[in-house]
Image (cartoon, rainbow, N blue to C red):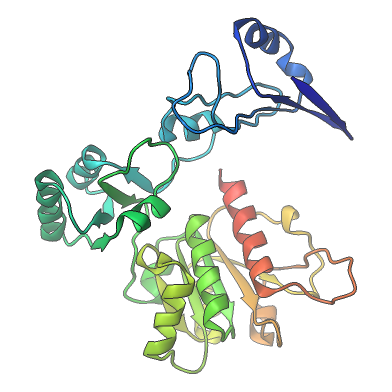
Amino acid sequence: MSAIQMSRFELMLFTHVDDDAGEALRDHAGQFNSVAFLDHRPARLDPLKEARRVGFGMGKAICVHAHTNQHQAHDRFGVPAPMQRQGPEAAKAALASGQAKALLVLHERSPDVEALLNIARRQGVPVHEVTQRDLWRMAHPGSDSLPEVLTLIGREPSAEDLHSMLARGGTVLCLDGVAYAGNIGFSVRTAEVAGATGVVLAMDEAITGRMWKDIRHSSMQATRFIPVLQSNIEETVAAAQQAGFRIMVIEDVGDHDLQEVDLTGDVLMIVGAESDGVSQTALDAADVVVRLPMHGFVPSYNLQVAVACACVEAARQRS
């Protein structure tokens, strides 16, 4: 057991917790802002003595053991469960309740999973066939074996148009004039992971088929699970205002810190291209303009940093 004293809080690191240490920790947990249980060894640990994952809590000890599944872990951390369900039974339940929005399955699958796919197709639920490597990469932690199927719930993965997407509410990311497929793909993936409703690409020129392909590749295929629509900035801000969205812009002329801004409810977050920044149209429509702190010599962050900061802060506030 070791302790690292830092300003304003103490971080306690436990590599092994036996019954006596656990009892002592419970008695004194209120003294620590964060408690972390660490173990570098692989899964299948003794759940009574060794913790596999790291848990953080304010004024309380949190330990997620080797046999705790992902839903218990998310519940214990006090954040919403992810939009992903694992395994055939979860897929069956999601399809029966109408919550299933998309399925991810292996090319080679069992008859039981094949039966689920037939139900999904009859319901119009998209089905994506992937390799074992892709399924492992997409699966949230919590399973000791490869899930046969992953199910998207909670978000429609596509939208007919901008108005129908905005009608769903929530967080919408708008990229104002961003032209590089790599930056767009990264932003789409970040928005998807953070639980956003969708992404708008505010561009005057039509996106070509090759560029859409590059965007999908850069997003690690996250475009399968979140709507990505093209519009222009004038139509985007007008539609957002009509739908009752608040508009937040990130730009170096801002006078608010990101953490000060309420990102719950219906919010359109606008990030501009690295060379030109956001358009005057976006600035004029903004309810608030945020400036990220910068203390170095280089005068701006990469676009991807601004997107990540905004999406993570929105996800934090919503949890």
